[in-house]
Length: 424
Image 1 (cartoon, rainbow, N blue to C red):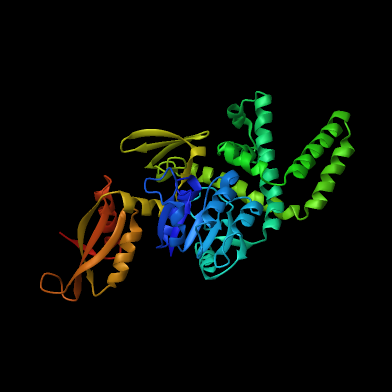
Image 2: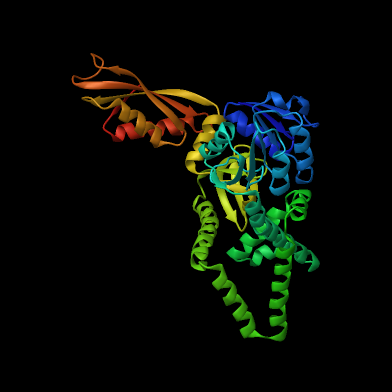
């Protein structure tokens, strides 16, 4: 499939350029900020045209695209569906039309586990191929109409973003020291505060566009009225009134018990990583910085409050726990394999009788994190060993991180523990 991403130099456009490219499709970009921008007049030469531009100009860009499109697939990735879908429907009847709304931002590494809403306005084989592509990538694809989508997004995005930005503004109005408050935080407060910060860290123009282009007036009014009603109960000391409103909201919400359980898992995940860092003191661990994507590999020396102290070969570094992700040991192993240099070391060991070479290779790799591979390259039975004995030459591929001899010695010790005798 030949794909043209209109707006491909923007954050979300770049994400979809990478997405289609990684699946073997030829991808071009139409964007004044791109080095090699394809004019929209050439759009008809592509199987799929993806419009990934800001919300306020999406319909205008679509209008321009449809002038030059007579076949293929036209799709958008906009968080509002009504106006863009109407614009795309003006394309020739032979043009397939697919509206999509990825419920994630460009910082997400993959679609796996992410929700993508699709509006199959004018389906066909190309649209089906794209949706299957999303599903194969692990996305949770939800089908909708433009009307249903926008009604839902008025709450899912409109209410949520409005609430979080309002909390951020309230913190500003209070001149509240957010950083210092972390010394007093509960798990729920910590998670809420991070979500407020997450929204405030985004492009404010995008979030303003979402608010201005969705039917959010009733949603905003309901939130403000509810907040004022609760405030009146507090101001009047109406304990029962507050309780009644909270109970009524809970009845309408429905399954609050499951919500409690799901949020508990989120809290547990946050606490468990912190505990694992504490348990890793004295051990080598890998921490990925969530903003720069740089991986720090070293021995955890200490965990002090919200800071982890890591000793690397280049020296000691202190990292804020909130800014790093603790890699699993398998993830760390894959990173070391891809990024660190390696050396080979041969170990020769004699066993009485025969042993399974595959077993020797497996236990050698499992013995030490720095042993990446093991290969039995030589099996010898002859005059140089005792009758009935077998000598095995095992070639180890070891990370060259300053602990090569420790890793090799650990494997040798293992072989001796299995009844083997080392040959020099």
